[in-house]
Image (cartoon, rainbow, N blue to C red):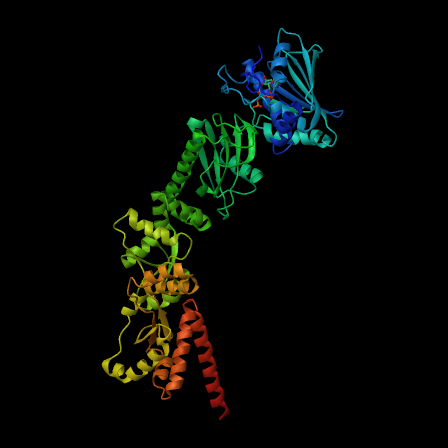
Length: 589
Ligand SMILES: Nc1ncnc2c1ncn2[C@@H]1O[C@H](COP(=O)(O)OP(=O)(O)OP(=O)(O)O)[C@@H](O)[C@H]1O
């Protein structure tokens, strides 16, 4: 009885597949380049040889010419039933176990690799024979059809013949076939020949000694490495070498690594094998355990890959630590090339932090020294957090015998601060510009009394700019004035600037913030040791003295790279013009 209208009975169906769409998708969109067809054919041949249990006797011959390309192996071959099952079913592979897991000894696992041949061919012929069974010829077409018929008699094994699609002939040419077989197959443990000449049988480069490795790096990566670190990660069955780059690289450019899986080249530029901080190394490795993605262009990002990454990171770190212990000069050279990466690493790695502290010279107002040397000399690490602050204060601080590190370079301030958190013996102090003024000498009482009217007049001129004028005597005498902003004053200045731009609601919040703490005003410290300042303080004309103070204020602002507010710019403008007017009037007399 049929169900009443409007109700459905549950029917179990299977997906329908449009074969042409799948063939097109897998062959044209999965792989980045049509050149991978050689890799997939080599891989199938190697797997078929592995399946015989006698890899040493394995032979793969690629022949080109007469407009076709043939890959012949003396592997296990297929029976007719297997041909129907394996070649004609997309996604079916003989390389998985009953539970569907990839069988360890094989390179393939997905059951789609052969389809990559449709990138370059319209027709694929597989002529195969299993020992003791009849030879079979399977022909597949890129429109999704296939035929199976009896094949010509042959030795056990398989020959895959590709008939090029129009426009792809060059990809099957003798030169390209040779180049690709070399690229993908040169480390394979079976014999590979192209048109009768052998390509394979190279030993893995890291088993041929250091000299060979240096030559390899130059040939393959195009540089003579600064050093070579051997890599070994047993749980990933991984061996290989990391080449330390001899020149700086942008840490943001991700360097790819040459990765072989079971000695078949996966790709020349694989990402994710090293942690990001190790941008100074390029690797070549072979792994028996890491897994490829289906396109075989990248490594599958699983737990094993992240463990491997960690293990390689440890080995690179160990190399650095060893270098520090055995050859500090060489470490110094390395650091001068790759300091950015090492400093980035030091932010989350204690050993690297110590290496940077001990060996990396930083800029200070007493010359280039390491943080360790600086600490030994000054008892603490006093630092400026920006290059501007350092530039403004370095000479003045040095003249007061105050050592100062420029923390303005990338990561330097963070590194200094981290040092103090990992080692409580290490004292650090951010230089408070206003504190510097406390080290300046005051004036003797008589001079101070004499200059009081001048100071009061100067203060009146700068009051509206929120700046306090003080007179001190300090070195260097060549510096007439210094504009010092305490951190809280700097914060307050930023707050006022934001307040001016903010809308009412946000402005209210900023106002509330501004009133929470009393703020020290920025100081213009005039240097009484400076001859010009002395002459200014002695001027009898109060207007000229006022213009001079305003100009000193502007000059000190600019010297310290302080922000120039509209009110400052207006003042600078009027004082300059005022002085100019005076100078011209004087000159005309
Ligand atoms: N040269 C060959 N000799 C014997 N069998 C082969 C050969 N080439 C392919 N086959 C059979 O055809 C199946 C499908 O091959 P295909 O290349 O499409 O996938 P795969 O190698 O199993 O996996 P992957 O997609 O990861 O390469 C293989 O599992 C294998 O059984």
